[in-house]
Length: 163
Image (cartoon, one colour):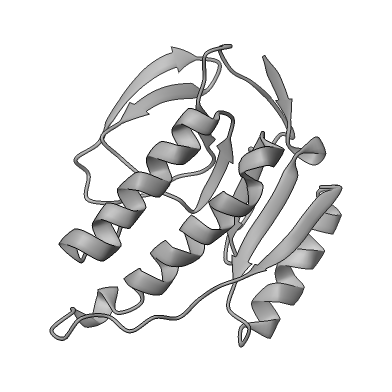
């Protein structure tokens, strides 16, 4: 299956106060000819007492992703971005993936290094044991629903970032 990023519904998550990021995202999406993109207002939520300073925003980030994913559920495939993404020199708007693909994670993330990646050719890898949400093309309701479930579990039950 060939996915053309320019033809997808695109939402980018952005705090109301981050006006410079909003301008950058509008400019970026326009420069990439992403036809249907719009800002999704991010939420801020208090974190539990004792949350490490590096994770203080995890509840707002997680809930913002849950809300955004819920808003595009009936518009798949959809591209969901955070408002500080950048495009590399390797960017191509056309991505060929196997027909049974649930999602496409665009980019890189260092995370905790505990993930697995298997080369499947054509510059693609099948990844597991990672849930990074910075730039993802959601292809199936099944995967979107799984991400929403994991995010809810993480931010409301075990009190940690979901990605």
